[in-house]
Length: 262
Image (cartoon, rainbow, N blue to C red):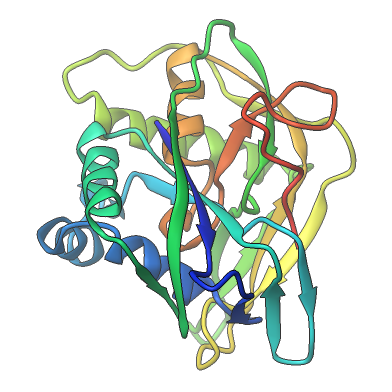
């Protein structure tokens, strides 16, 4: 399920954020949850094979924007998509949004001028998707002295494809623990040349994160494709990476979301 929030300033003014803002968006999303759920997801999450999953993703802010040295400025409001495979998370966010007249987004007071809820149904084993936040896949490697380092993978690499599939399997097992795992491989094929995005999560963490914007064909078992649409593709979904949506190959998706990306 996806929730589309259209955010505006009460005085009709601009919404101004630091250019490094993923930590701000993550905090904003957590603040849209009840305190108990936010604490559980942030501190614990859902565990499998030694990994923790939050089972939600969110887009980067969308809207008309301009940049200066330190800030990105949305001059006519902004939109944010929050997506989850778990109705408990989606309903919790909806309850909080509908109860709050105003919200804080960094130093901005904003309100939801509209809230749209929709479910993206998968009826075939091949769908066209568009990134609402970049898809991130990486491996942790080790130097000869034992120090770890991160290698980010591109969509053209076998490791990227393998991780996409294995990541979705883990999410499926967490969401549907009593169901058999669907047979078949998930593959991701670019419809056009993907665009590399490098970003920091927060200003005091100098480690860059890399991901890919683009339009893709996603193939595989329908159940796994549904998980990809709802919980996100790849890693770092709850930090603002891997949120995707269905789209028609005419430039916009069926819900009117534009091509995303900064």
